[in-house]
Length: 454
Image 1: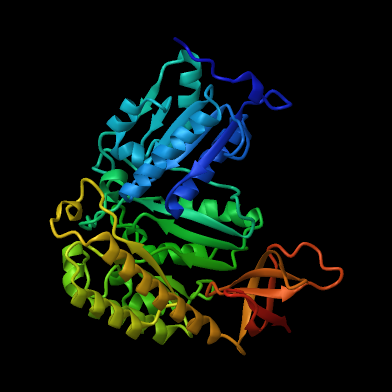
Image 2: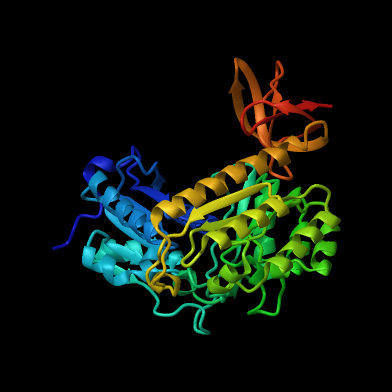
């Protein structure tokens, strides 16, 4: 039986169909969700918040952990509950890895795998015409039969900073990770397309771009390009004042890479070097392709060529087989390196990975206790780094208003991603997208520091 495409009670005042999108997962997913939103706008849809009733709900799913799978299922069902007559579209990594599970569940009307998001408007049109469920999930991605999926943005949800996806897929096969199966092998975006999108964003007023990808450091391995050359080309685009880099593989941080990067003043000294463990035996079981000594050398290079760079990382607590001694080794290593921020994750089994099949899983209470210790260390080091900026001159790109203890401020971020605020002055207009220079004077809140303008 054909289901009505539009529920009568959701039509906008001008008769346009309403679409709501929800993103789960990483910054690459966020970019793709914004690109799909732009496609729907261009196709004539009115975009409404996901919390409202809509004719179409698009959920860009995540499958990085078993918990992510569960959240993806929950969001699909939540959309159906919000409007039983709506068209529910499941997109992305959970769809790619659990196609049969989604089909058996039956909640989604359209399911779209990775490398097929650009087909969203046409697949909606196909469903509208036939009333039958639509499926487009590729069997293999990035195995020589698939190319980089070209999506683009002219505007983003943020008004000062734009994420720019330049790469997809991963060839690393870490023992805990499903992403090479969900996203496929490495595929790089053409340099000319990256530069064209950067120029469009600059023309639309964006002053900061964040280069991101599933495994950013692999940019160009499939096409003869390389990440450093791409950064240098983005650096040449007029109007862009800041370039941030997504997560980097420690092995890319060679002396030549860092030296050339330090000669590009638009590059923010804010580097995310994924670590996962500070113990070599755990890194080996994770199938990470570097040692703690190599990682430490990379941090030392960044600190040699950049003044007070912000170095951030990821750490997994309770990886299968992690002993108390191995965990203490990680704690000592992290304390020695000193990070601006650490993203702490309790290990979560992901069906289909080697780590999930390990028999010596760490008990949940042990993982929770280790995670708590890591979080306390992360908080201590973050405050240490931010406090080191007190009394120093810096520049902030303002983003939004901010109220504190009856005073009005404008808030933004330094190049190192330290959050800072300046006092609002009488007659100040919209602060958005304005650079201000000054000196960080003191801490206002837990994570906001006062900048006194020059």
